[in-house]
Image (tube, rainbow, N blue to C red; front, top):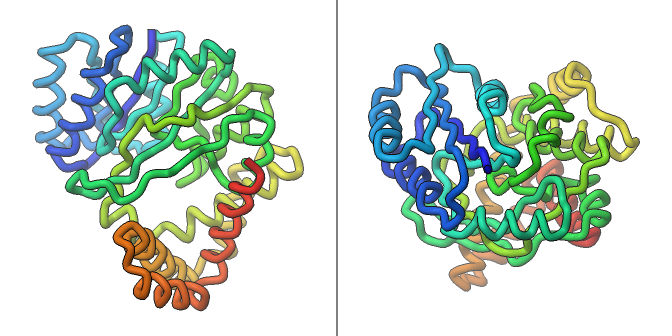
Length: 305
């Protein structure tokens, strides 16, 4: 049995319904659906989830007494799992109908421990923005690629329960808990891979593009990446100290601005608006040295996978 874990907070009701239904309508039927509401005052979410739970007893609904954050909510979900396998889901994404079936076959056939898959990026209305063409699949190449960035998309995870048990769940590595988890899994000897097929529609909202903590996330990623390159597991306390030392308003603003430009370029490329794409590309070159480093990391990830 698969235990699907999802934490909800303040997602739009329509998006939440689409997310829940995408799991309930899976072709693979042997699963439990553990939903954690991390905003106890969200009466809309309570009503929606309880409505589905009455119709489908595979849903197990829990409400945190107070806002705990994603890390603690996921760890609570892990403690409630009964399945031999664990899958992740976010409350505004959409799993493709045969996602779990295809991922289970791939994981079992190849004796992998933790896998992800390809995501299709959609906007708030569900329209396709762009689709990732391919993801690395060879475990040895993935281990090398992880020196630059995460390459196992968190919302697409399916893994054996023992991976989560050996890792002792997620750590408080803000904004990078999934990347930290993946690196620790590899260092603990588990074999990770990707199914090189689309398995999920990932929702890109205006908040996800322009959220103010993007630069903070980059700094955490940089620190734990450097520790991984030295074959070490990053210290949570030292990572926090590193971030606080380098975090500042000026660089945060530049990084955020660069991210807006970059995402606009993706849309321009999709729409074949080549002149605006070139202009924005020129602006991006002079936007943020840290964001350019992020792009460099993605290029190196591609070359090493």
